[in-house]
Length: 440
Image (cartoon, rainbow, N blue to C red; front, side, top):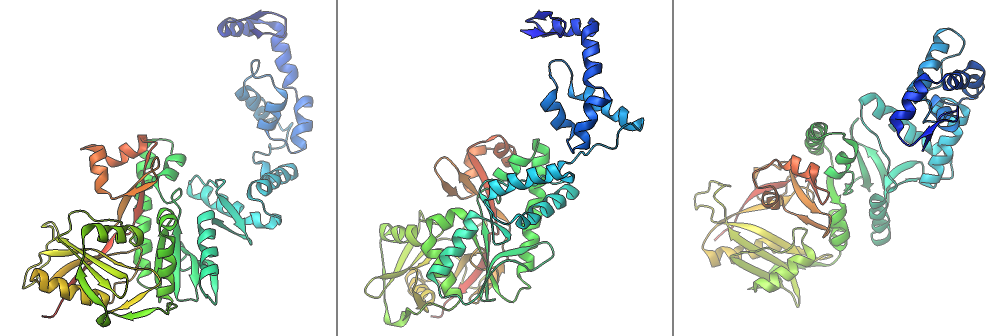
């Protein structure tokens, strides 16, 4: 039931609107409500028009646009000073913003909020929509995600690191999340901010979403190219693989910092062919890419226990590499047990496979997340190209990009993701392509 100030009521909004347009009592009410003496005291105290409107105005009687136009007229006539549009400019607004930020981020020092304000200002100037979700926390005057803090704590607890720095700038546009002993940088990619889920939340339409993704992909490529000029290696840890292969990542960090003490010479180990079940069980536990289907040969390296596994598949014709003997096989998986260094393990396994398959050259791929710089072994055939994985939120699985072809058929991938609440795209740096040769 809708009512007018004169007492007339009706359940139809159109009827009551027509009545107000003719009602003298309603017009007098609006004039009284919008009079200077009723508005001025609140605006002088730092209230915004929106705050005053929501607190004192009956929205069924007067629209916000009507209130705003009247106040603009008062300002134009010189009866009012310019209204404080941004609550942050008033003392009352500053206190309100500070209290909400303190409550949201659980910090004790209000000065830590300067980072948030600066980033919001930068985002506004660039036309971005800067949002900070509940998963973000302020720590020691800097801002970082929960997953970054989780990686940092795990590294400090499990490894003997002398110096740890966070949020280290290496370029005017980029920074490392973690820098260890000035020898190894770690960039931690959360599944929210580094996937399409974030862009879907800040974009208003599909065309804006597509443009933002294009800029984001270009930014990733620029970032990777800058890695090549750094004096140290960079590891890129994504949130999904950290939760499923935490031991692998900690072992990898220790290996890059030369902290592993369990070192075994491959020449003293036994090499033999193993079954697909044994190999896939090993890959599932210790390899980021998991099991492999359709492998031609699985070879294991033993020293009392299984230390490493090499799985080979027939080389695909879409990736030709020239070699005098021809390339017929590629290394699909090479997995080493965490916390162990097997010296010459890959060479020993490749020599066995070379004799078994009667070939001297193999194609191999090295994930750029594990090596920002070219690997020291093999010959570089192709540099990493930007690629993506499909994240299935329902089953918490990160799938290969070929899985997307089954989902979309011949449709646009970006259009499918924009309309899908279940799937997201996680962009990554691809792989180095190598040519590995063995001696007969």
